[in-house]
Length: 185
Image (cartoon, rainbow, N blue to C red):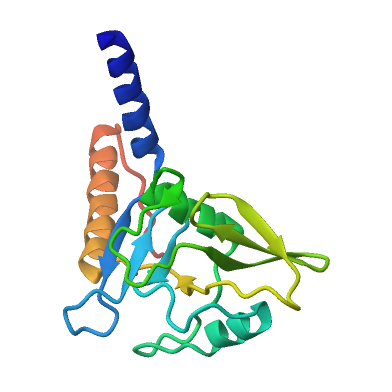
């Protein structure tokens, strides 16, 4: 019995370790978290999942594209890969996705931006299953994401890197029998 409990505990820990992480982000500088950076998909998820209720795909896609928050205007519907990554990151309880730090996560189906022919795909947060719908009738929830910004290295990091290269070059010249330098003639 103890061996079985240990095995279950190890499997749960391994699953948790494989999941990504969520880091809060303050986009507008008001010291409140506006989005969460999901490390595996490298996207920012808006903190409120279901802003305007369920809608057809065309309306959800247009709504996502029109979103603007604190100067960030490139919000969109997530891909299936991004939805699955968030589902794995948040984990589930009895199949249903945990809501984590997000607001207004309604249990149900959420649109993705992925299509195949006439089918548009989504994720059912109650089961974790992929769903396929035609746009002409189904109303699903929408959640917006945007690409995570790639931080620029601070100037001090660049300066330290350049200094390290110079020091290493100088050391290698000293350790050699002679160090060739070119002089203008």
